[in-house]
Structure formats: C-alpha cells, structure tokens
Length: 363
Ligand SMILES: [Zn+2]
Image (cartoon, rainbow, N blue to C red):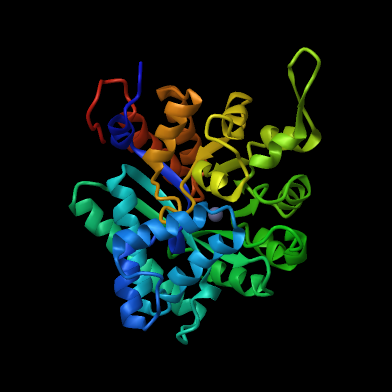
C-alpha cells in the first residue's frame, strides 16, 4: 500500500532537530534584511528561496555556510528573533508536527547588542506565540528550545550555564554545533561536566562530517542523542555471509538506546550521504537503532518533516509502520520529562496513528 504525502502530513509527528536560523521563511529574510539594512543576493522571495537551496546544494561547504551568514545577520534584534521563532512553530505545526524542539546558538545573535539572556527571552516568547497561534488555527503543538554552543568558540561554559538558568522556562537541552574536525567535544569538557552535575540533557552534532572519533567523543561527554550520527555505519561491517557485525561503539549506541537525529536531505547536501535510497538511516533503522527523522534546515533544504518521511517512503521503501516507529522513537527521546513524553504519546501520537483510514485523527 502506498503512503501518500497527505497521509504523512495528517499524522501527528515529532521533530527533534530543527535550526531556527535554517528555517526562516524566504519572505521574512527579505523583510528583516530591509529593516536591518543587510544586503541579500536577491530581494525576490522566490528567487531567494532558490538561491538558498542552490547554495546549499552546490557541494561547497563555504557556500553552504554562507547561507547562514544571511539568516543570522537578520536575526540580531529581539523582534526578529521572536518572529522567526513564532513562524517556525507555525510552519512545522502546519506540517503536522505536534511536538518540536527548535534550536539556536544565542552567541551568534549578539551583533545588535543583545545579551545572551535577551536572545533566549525573545526566542521563548516567539515559541509561545507560535504555540498559541497554531492551537487557534487547529494545529496544537508543544514547542521547546535547545541551546547550541559553537564548537569553534570558547563559550560553551557560558551557554551551558545559560541553558541551566532557563531550564524551567522551556529550554530542555544543550547541543554543540559547528565544525567537527579539529574541534573535539572533549575540549568543551567543563561545560559537559557542568551539565552532567546538573542532570541536564545533552545532544551533540556528531558523525556527520567526521566519523568514529567524533561519535566516540560525543558518547564520552554524555550525549543522550546524536545529531545526525550517520557515520555510525562505519562501525558496522558485514561478515562473509552478509550478516552485519557491530563494533563496540555501534553496539554501545544501540544497547544504550542513544537516539540518532537523522536529517536525510541535509546529509545529501553536505555529502554525508549519497542518495536517499542508499542513506544509512534505513540500515540503522532495520538494525534496531533508535532512529528519528528530522529536517535540520528547512530553508536550505527546502523541506519539512513530512517531505523527509515521504522521501524515505518513495525512495528507500519505508512503510507506514516505519514512519510510526520513528515517530514514537522521537517522542520517547524528547528532552521533556518522562510523564510529559508519555502524555504526548498516549493523548496525541498513538490516537493519531490509529489505523482508521485516512484523514486527521487527533486526540
Ligand atoms: Zn543540525
């Protein structure tokens, strides 16, 4: 039975890996750039959307990174941050997402004189506005926030403290992003120790650009989830009969249920995978890893969660059961407390995934 895109949109879904500066609406970039006096490659929203995708598709990491210089440049004032956060919630809710963890790096939003706390405040306000508006539009969603520290800067201690200071206000986790090669997670050990002592959840971008060592480091610093993590397949070989043989790291990640935040289209753009059909996510799912599917950068990848899942259905042979499995896995690995996760599963996700034919079924 084929699974249509509309069916996937109608399913309640969970999104754990979505960057605010990678999800700005093209028209919003244009409007905010005009206010900020920032020059863009073009001020036509459709042409700009194509420019973002083409730059991200170009295979050049420099061109890919340059796209973020534009979105970040227009997100330096509280109003702009609030708007981008609000619109992100509205957009993913309209795509059928019922629980989202958005993320951003506060340290990249201080060019206009904002304190780190002011940047966080603006985003939290925007998320709350988005939740209220989405509910009023018939798409109820819970939106939480992760704070990213950049691997290449030396502010991880500060960002970890910031996350802890906001843990009861909607910040539910900490992440590190930026170049993996040359900037090991272990160099930020003090930040991770601070978070571990405070019992605060951590995810780490790892196993995207770099392989085993980077994944090992992420596990060492206590990551409960791995951003991408697809290079774990490097630690899985096949014996002469074709049966998979897991290495110590792959076993550890699977045994401990460390979740993988896989972002298929983004991986194609950065070269971490060659095609959706051959993307390691399918192998990892079949082997029983805690696989979740995510968007990463909706603007640069011109995608949404429904589109990512539908690509896996049409190009990698995924079934509706596979979509259900990764949805439940994502809900179980959300960084909110276990009782809230269970409530989300019982009241929203399972009723919405009941085999009652097509159409929307929300609790
Ligand atoms: Zn990411």
